[in-house]
Picture 1 (spheres, rainbow, N blue to C red):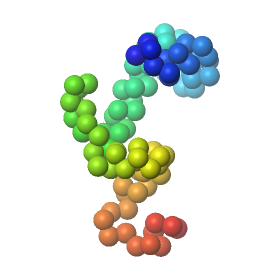
Picture 2: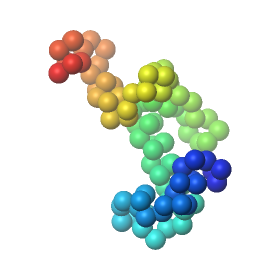
Picture 3: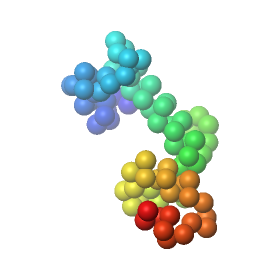
Length: 93
């Protein structure tokens, strides 16, 4: 993790990323771990990834589509909530 772009940016500008009280005062490694765990839980909750544990995580077809077409996470959550028989008016409205 220490070689990732996010970890380096976090190390250089820690105060920018400490937006919530529960992250304040933690080390860079703890903040990185907390944010990664939270994001993995959110991706799993919306069926964008499957698996439990670092060795078994896989992207679903929905997760692949989100990554391939650069769909923001909040937009993908809306798409996932529509269901399979959504009307055009629901998609654009």
